Length: 343
Length: 116
Image (cartoon, rainbow over all chains, first blue to last red; front, side, top):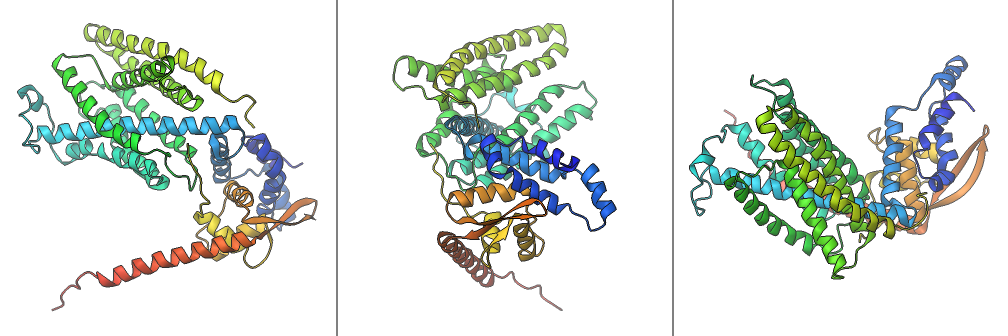
């Protein structure tokens, strides 16, 4: 076996064992044939020092992710795939609701919603103006479009929209890092962590297979939009009035804990039986949000002690709440997950 | 919770088309698809076997024969009756879509700039 073949077989180990047993030798044969050279010296060099291109490695990695998240395979991998799709939809719902509330707030402060009461004076003062600022605020609506795309089975459009919705976050991350405004770098770590989380979200959409349709029951997901938007708007208003210590990671933590409590309560009261997909999906969200919460606390540790301590305490409480709901979710998920090692 | 339908994505469309002329092995399909698409679609091996696995599973493509070429395995695949039917239906759908767009474009041409 040449070194080139060895290297490619190592890459193919990313694929599930059952799939590899069926296709590995053929895939190796095609790669070797595609890298053949007429010149014997050059052919020997390629056999010894050649490597599959990054695009080939990427295609195998993408295939592995698709297969392991429910494209084919064991009941266990199908459950994981369904759970990741649920988690993606819930994360997109949270983004869509936050984006809609943010855009609505912007329009309200700009006086574009005259039927609503006047915003409090203290709210209008710090609102930055200018094209880019307005565009960034309204760009939250792109998340709404991305959510609806996945709901109605338009996977490619949904992915493109997530990529587009990530642009303002990427700009904010760069700006917070280079600190072009001259002030102290605020929330630099949080900006990058949120961008990374959105990148992971984009990657997780691989669980939506080509040609897959949206969830079987779309109506509850659609109802979740106005209900979630109204709840978040009320929560944001109440939070600002009471000067609640709640940042975006904290808000997501509250949402995940509330969703998990509703789910666990429903299961305990036998209103709705727990399913492994939902337990896993909420567990994935709780774990991701806990990660976001802990990493973003670093920013507060860098703040001056007077205000930093209060934020650290609030953040720690949120982390504990996430751990508290995560434990029973993990138990339910472990009990319900089909047995067997993923293929 | 999710239903799946046979999806004719662009790589699947070209792979099915590449097999219309007769059975081909993996590398042969890659070359034929590149030629048919005039170089636009360069199938990666992971993509080829991801799609091929699905097409075989859906009964649109089947194994024709196996050969050993210089000690390497070569499996030839052929289009099934269902595959031919699926490709034909997809080609008609794409042609109909194309006609709709072309008619619309003809109907709503931008006003030409006035020349002096």
